[in-house]
Image: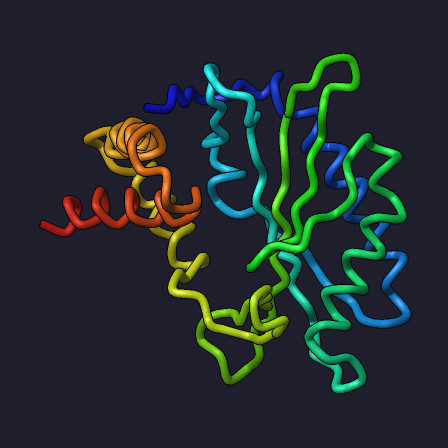
Length: 211
């Protein structure tokens, strides 16, 4: 069993500010090829950053890289490679390791130089939402088939943020209860990403408001 607790702002604020700077450098670096905005996912925004105090996994951020336009000039593999190459240009300024190409993300890790300890990591997912799409498409990588492809997400993050806002307004402290439930899920369900667990938590708590 894990032992996740909520990280304090003091624990993560310095790293979060470094990520802002890193993202701005990458935006400027790629500006002549394509442009993008970025979004910290709700589990990285709503004071929901967790850390397992008994394990060497640190805490993690999850950030969407939102392409403003998919240009036919670049295929899916080229888009991801351009992002990874750009991040790798600047990662060392902030003591991040080189990028790792994951199924749905680009992963970077920050380690303690003096001790073999992982302090935190960040997953960047490449997304695009065209006018015809209700939910954003995400760029996936199938390592076994060496294939890159776009696929729609199951989670509507705008709707998730709206539900969180409503939970915070609830007079029965349901947001406080949601935070407890989310932490419980983090400590018992290790097969799902944080944003999936948060979505499930919010849906469960939000359903109680509607009853």
